[in-house]
Length: 412
Ligand SMILES: [Zn+2]
View 1 (cartoon, rainbow, N blue to C red):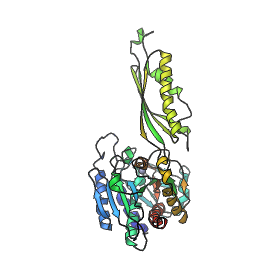
View 2: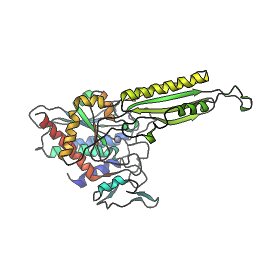
View 3: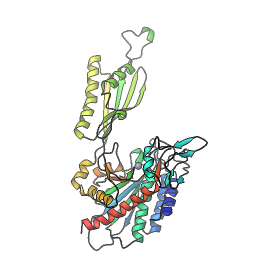
View 4: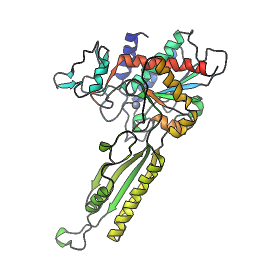
């Protein structure tokens, strides 16, 4: 793999602004995502991919035909082209730091923004490597343009090295992952892969096939407004009732106090006046039974308080958002084993852990395309401290090549 070539490719992608917009119902949510999609469309044609097709919804698919004379399953690789609306992705000025010395990296002198291993200790495992950072004023977009870089580079490498045997490979770049819609208009049938991997994890070695079951809850509390001077026995303050509801949920089952397989209730928005307060929660749990119990607890809590108050002040509306892909991946566990074996062959320690979130892969898995997630290499996503070691991008590219090759051996 040519390191400079990969750096150039990555820099080209991250300097194209593709921030998605959670408040725009259009699809894709921002026009600018087309900019990168069109660049990629041309590039895939240039490197010699076949069936390159950018559809009306900004999904870009392409094929690398098999170069063996027997049938093996078609495997897919998926990455997203948009960047998070949490932090600006306009005018990204990537900084390339060669031979990282393990000390603070000054991202921005004027604004005194420093990427320090004393705070971000993961940095130290990349001593001696080439690290790409921001200039402190934007996010980097390694999430997930590192993944895009890896897939394009792996396809190019396989095309240039016909001696490496592989079956049919399908690739897809999706819009709007960061606003939770990356899988929404994904044409699984047209993609035609038996399974796929999203290249969208963080540090080197990550391999994920378990994610949260997720729901959103809107809790509406109705009160009664009366002039405070004449309110005795009449006013009902919805905010007071809201605080009762909030405090009735388990105090330790919140994002800031949980990790690993521990689920939570997360109150992320609260808007209140005397007359009405609206609480917005997300509910998360890896375990389906516990997930359902959490939803029940919310309903029961509302019911209990309503009973105490003697009126239906609180109503709760719960909507499922996505489910744990484990259920869809475990029956075909060999797809995880293949990725794990490839990493081990390469001397990478696989870090298999549950995702505390969802991925496009979880939705795709439920749409009939089992889809674990593999590291793309970046750290500190969605903010100014985002960085990626080039060596991790190269390793992820090699993992894709390795999987393509491994499938030809496993299914011979
Ligand atoms: Zn991502």
